[in-house]
Length: 219
Image 1 (cartoon, one colour):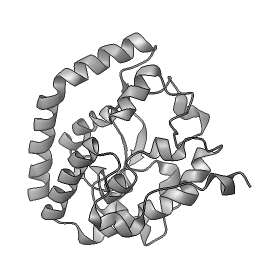
Image 2 (cartoon, rainbow, N blue to C red):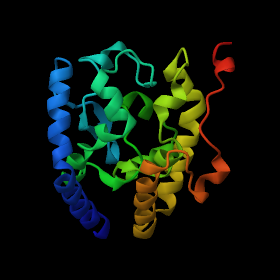
Image 3 (cartoon, rainbow, N blue to C red):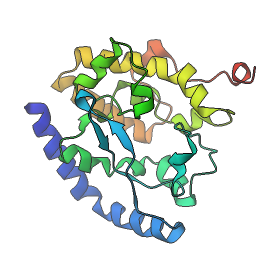
C-alpha cells in the first residue's frame, strides 16, 4: 500500500516537474523523422501479463520488426534526436504514465520482452511476482547498456551472454529483499547516477562493471 502511494505521488510529481521536456521532446521527434511520438512496445508485467510500455520513440518506425531486441549506441536504427534522448535517459520519462496506471512501479525489475521471459527458469519467474519498474539494482549496475554493447557484431548475443545473467541475479536479489527503504535508496542512487555516470553504489561493488569481451564474441 505504501509502495503504491509512493508510485502515485512520485509519478504525478515527475510528470508535473518534467512536462516542458515532454513538449520539447514531442515536437523534436515529429520534426526529426516520420512516425509517432511514443514507442509502445510489448513487455511482460506482474503475473506474466503483457502490457505496452510508454517511451519516447528513439528509433525509426518498425525498428522492432527487424528481430533485434538489444540496442547498441551505434545502432543505425536510432534517430538523431533518439541518440540525444537516450544519452540523458529522457526516453524513459513516459514510463511515468505506466507507473501512474499501475502497470509499473518507480522501483522494480525492468520489464522484459516476451522472448526473454520465455527463457526464465522456475526460480527466475519470481521476478514476475512484483510490478516491473523504471529503475532497480540491475539498472544501476548497467546504466548505459547501449555503450556496453557498442561495437559488438551481435548485440542480442552479447546481451544474452554477458549482461542478462547478472541482470537476472540482481533482479532476483531485489525481489527477495525489497522494502520501502530499499526503494527510496535506489531512487536516490538513480538520481546520483544521472549526474555521475561512472559512479557505482557500494552494494554493487562485488559485481564489477558490465563488460562485453568482444574478442570472444567474434570467435
